[in-house]
Length: 477
Image (cartoon, rainbow, N blue to C red; front, side, top):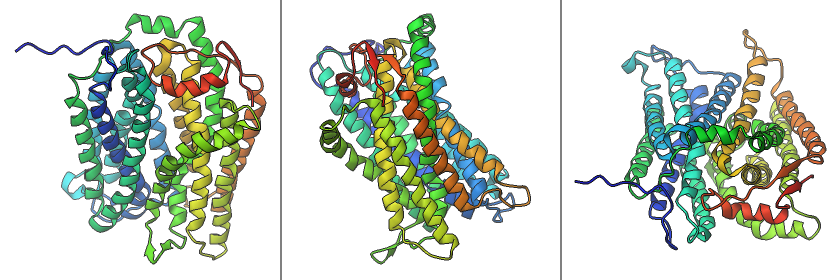
């Protein structure tokens, strides 16, 4: 039987590429697995973690926060390596399928962390290995998946790209919302082994689904030596130097945002979580973010941005700046709640809902805009690499949070910051970052590069392009 040779350039069709259904299905299942595991990670470490003998050996909340943010640091550090391997040597499909297998292995080890008497391994050691494998797998495929979507489209069906990315982003948040609701319940009723095992099964399904589409995908060949020639050209280096300061500012946003999976979870344990006669689990509250994201994207696109446009020019850097300032009250509110808790009060969880509303609005303004803006500012051959660089901002933000939690915890169990001081410290850091960003943005000068038929998100970039000059861009706040 003759071996099927995958296409190496987009199909000359006006309809949807045949491989898209496999990619969208894969993304929904993969995001279910990742966010399901992440949703219960803090609760697992502070309430369920055992020692090698099977006895409880839980972490305090400061140590757990250090582990969580160290893990997220690793997840968003590896995309740069995935991007290089894909664009330089192996191509996107191979990197995605190989690292997905590593990803699955990490979930297997994660499910065994709660069974030390079966494995004979110290749970903290197996937890470290599991999180490391998941970080390599999840992080490594991140810069490849979205650009693999763009690779499927040619000139004739390029107009469908916007629709596909809407479904792609919807599948991410659908998978996240479903797992964040379900997995904490599984943890409470059936224990950690099954709660971590189900995300592993979903990741295996995601990998199998992606493999099924292997003969329908367009496989763009890696660039080889040309990848480095283009990356280290004058225009490539200048684009990177222009974007690095932006990513440093955005990193502080992620330092606060990702604490919804750590500090906000432990704070929720001390709050009144009864809603309409039903007690919500502390780890389930994270579902508010993906639900609000799905609601806010059309709200901002069709209502808020047009209203803003009536009073000022809505540029990408202005959106990001507004988002940075919005993050300040989003974290100041939990700081106030913590002061109420320390005073003996039991505030209602509805306050966390409002904090999520503010923080998710900031995410829409910062995260989506910064990603799209990064694409427009990157030379055509560097789109995946620049996406990897952008994801490093998430890594460095979480690294900062992990370092803070490491140094405020003393060996005797005492802390150098109270919980209230902890929240106000990050709030002050965010405010200072936002002020410095406004100053920096006045001096930003960059070039907008419009990708051709192989662009990952050309339709999404169009909104940015329409508000900026096509060559030199003065995009100050």
